[in-house]
Amino acid sequence: MEFAVSQILSGISLGGQYALIAIGYTMVYGILRLINFAHGDVFMIAGIMMIYMATTLPLYIAIPAMIICTVLLGFLIERAAYKPLRAAPRMSVMISAIGVSYLLQNLALYITGGQPKTYPRIPWISDTVTIFGARTYVVTLVTPFLVIALVVALTLLINHTKIGIAMRAVSKDFETSQLMGVKINTVISVTFIIGSFLAAVGSVLYFTNYPTVVPMSGAMPGLKAFVAAVFGGIGSIPGAVIGAFIIGICETLIKGTDYAIFSDAFTFALLIVILVAKPTGIFGEKTTDKV
Amino acid sequence: MLITVLTSQKAPAAAAVLVGKNVAIVLGSYGSGVSIAASETFKNAGVAAMGITCTNPNVTAGNDHYFRICFLDPFQGTVLANFAAKELGAKKAYCLGELGNEYDQGLISYFTEAFKAAGGTVISDSFPTNNSDFTTYINKAKSEGCDVFFCPVSIAYSTQIVAQAATKDVSFAILGSDTLDDNMVLDAAKGTDIKLYVSTFYAEGGNADFDAGIKEYINTNADAKTANGGNDTISAVTAMGYDAYFVAIEAIKAANSTDPGAIKTALPTVKYTGVSGDIAFDDIGDAKRDTAYIKTADNDNAAWKFVTQQSAK
Image (tube, rainbow over the protein chains, first blue to last red):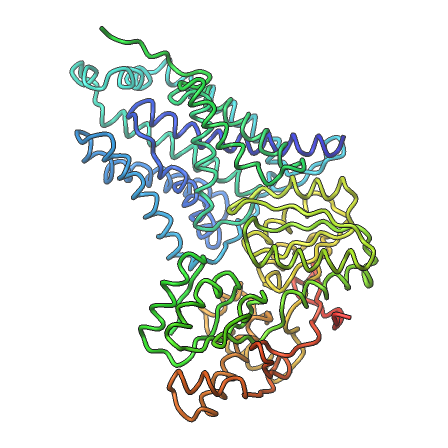
């Protein structure tokens, strides 16, 4: 019982953290048709910034400052590496994204000297609680609720605000919405800002749970979140969240069995199966062929 | 010159840079995987290399250019298994290593062999590279009722394991190899009720002059202090690096030249009494060592406490 509760709690928490990264992937894809490979590394940089800021600043300043810097980083990446390639073939933008990903990883390697860094303890969410005999961090319980609250807020934003309408228009048809007077650069920047904000919040939750940051820390969670986004139907926010929870829970359950070695293999095998059986994912938009 | 290499894939390129700079002798590397990957490059260049803390037998086996000043994995795995079985009275052990890492898997197999020979049972698991969620493995070890959790993994993983085990209210002791002998691991264990034991090359207090000298150096050099985790605790790798440096100087003296070939010929005959004990090489190029230090983490003061000197017998 304690074992089962403990495993499921780990899974839900991990799924929630993947979900916050997956939303960033799925939103950018929905609007730009770009897989932003640097997103996982923005998440890692958020972790490293937090570590350095927390050494000099009190936490109530360090956390907002870290979130603002991460948002700024996401914004600058889009302006510097993706905007100049707006008219270029989609492949060029993707390669630019891969370039940014490696740039961020190596930058982190240079700054930290490759030494693993320990994430600061954040009061309250780093405390431990006992549920049905299983001990865990408070953050494990907070994560799913925070994710749901953020997703509701995001859905309201997309469905009921002017910028949300513009985002939906841009995701339907890039050129036409531009002709209709939608400022696409603003819309795209807002998308990156929201995505980076969620990555920053996700990094606080994730690294509180797993308190060591290395330059490769963003690679695996990023990749898994990407799989989650594809699984749920890339472009769909509820899809990304549900996909992330399914992947997080399955991964921890497999790790608890004798087949623990295959937990990552399972995640990526799932990606292949989904792409073959239902290429648009669970909640993916149906593509209509225009004649 | 100093080159920092993190992965085995990059080791041959780093080795080529060293060879290109015409170095007289190579000290390193820290890890077996990296050392083995770079070995061929040093061999072709005719440069001797001296491993400092790489403990896998394959580093020095079957070649005449790679030496080492530390003990080996079969020895270390056996020492830890004996310590677990005899000193801690453990009956069931959980072993966790990184998938495809020669160091981790090697130690786990030697530990398993010796622990089973002592009458215990072993459960082994491996985690994929860059994994950061260890709670599932910890839960498993806990529900299986294991007495010790043996994780001879690198620092990035071991700090995670210690921190995550601390939240899980575990009753087992965490047992680590020389890689866990690091101040960052101590920090992760600080203030928790984790029982942590590590085997290592040197324990603080072994040589008073050396301890005082190193502490003075660390405290007067801000960069060194940051790299040391922000305090002046002496880790075993510091002592080993220090000894390796002087063994290399002895070899250069014995060869009476800085020619790589002459040093390579002179190195097997070098004998030196370092801070970590007497150093002399056997036919394979390994240092002759017969005991390891076992230390435990003092979680109230974030310091290591010397436990015992454990032999392989």
